[in-house]
Picture (cartoon, rainbow, N blue to C red):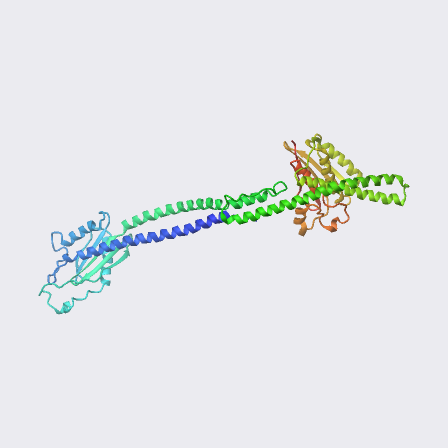
Length: 501
């Protein structure tokens, strides 16, 4: 399962937050700009509605219906002045409808095909507006003589502004009623819609571009913020035998990571001290025990020669000599492992004929386990530069394990091939299946020191669990490796990889 990236999550969350903010800001700004333009248009409509007052007929004067005069009416001049008054060009349609107090049409614009439909909207809007109240102290219009006395102060209804839609366009309509007339003006919103479309397109282009910049910036900033974590990761990866002296500098680190780095550096110091002590103890113990074991082995061999052949004493001395030799082998392995831990395993490099070594090992297998079926697949002349004695020890361990952990009447397969830079030696054998519940831990720990797997499978097999660990250290000292291959059930395979030069 692939784990999510914390850096990617920071960049995505930052981009999502910025995107939400920008989209919200853009939407609010767009509506604010649109409302501001509509409010400005309403103010102009109100101004022009108030300007219509001088054109209204005096009270008591019979209204002149449009078409009764051969010359253009004063409402036509008023309508023509609206374009200049609204600051629009001649392409912006403007419709005007004027009714008298009784609902008769004094003027209606009919120069555009769409004016008929707009005039219906204007008439409908005027019908929805109630009549204005009469001036204070005057009787209703029906109860007084309109031909007597000066016109009173006109108090029109407050204008109402709405947006109506026809089949092809949207119109902003302002309408009001005076005591002696009704006026409604409609302005096509096409110009405002074009301006808002331009603003919308600007937002549609600028917001994604801004989000891209935010994403790149968040990625770079998060990378810089996580740089101390990468330094910690790199330092942890270097925590090997040769990397315990690594320390992370604190001088250029952010204050949030200082304590973490200090704790990590202290941990490295403790690990280095403990590992040095353990490695020194292992090497010193092996070195100190080497001499008395050698003396003990020599004394046992000399005493063994002096006792009567076939006696009980000879048998006991032989058993003791075998145990001493076994201890000497353990000491040699521990000494080599301590040198490997300290990075001081010295190699005596000579040209080694790997084909010849494999043939020698096959002769030993035929003598030690003649019941096993041995199959080979390698050619002559597989040569490389290496320490012959140490490579023999690696092969002896692999063949010894292939014999000890094999099945009755089982098999061993040896395959070796080389590329231009690498030599691969694979030794496989028949074996019992590793339990599924233990497969992961066994494969993970098979190269650990003193690990011998399932006790039920290994209690009758000689060994202490140092052979594979030492073999891998020898391979790595040659800049190669020893790995456990992934195989089918019923077999085990190890591959030794060594550089040709």
